[in-house]
Image (tube, rainbow, N blue to C red; front, side, top):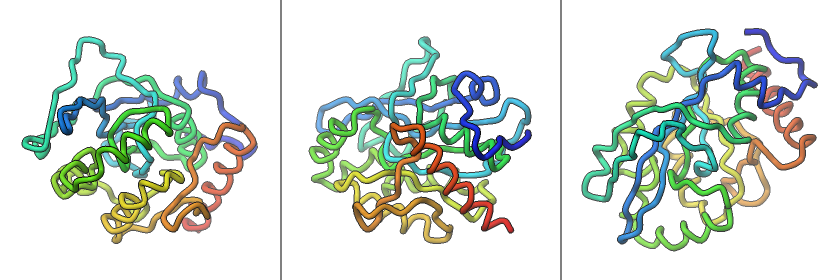
Length: 233
């Protein structure tokens, strides 16, 4: 796969022809409330079949991407069975953030990216998500919505077991009430080098990959691409 020119903004229509996007969706019950969740998203080049990810990306939470398989009913979990959470990947409709990761994959000639999140709770509205997080994170047991939770250590380790790179791409944003999970992420990935654009919003904040303005999207791509390119020199 050839690298895209550094000044070229590749649009979604072209990206969908180059990459296959699959996600694993489930439902989580916390304090009697059912939350729609996604525990993993895979982005793979259609040109090469590989089982070893080139990069693991950690985002804030799943946005608007949804499974396109309407026949696959998500399984439901709670605190008693979250350790048995299964990954069932199905064809998924991507969102703007995932397109941005695809653009970086083109620049770095990556074939396979796994996207995880600080929280699995799906909500494209960051304000609503922030309110949900504030409500459910009062008790430690409620953090089962995060793959970083002690209850889900095996799930995370199974992903990391076949990951050969030393780098984690952080793009989890600036939501201040997620600082506990951000700090936990830095601990979980202490054996890796975290790459991202540090934000001055909080100690553990990293800029989101897909700001609204296209010129800011291009700036993030340029900065991250240069970071990785300098590492590989």
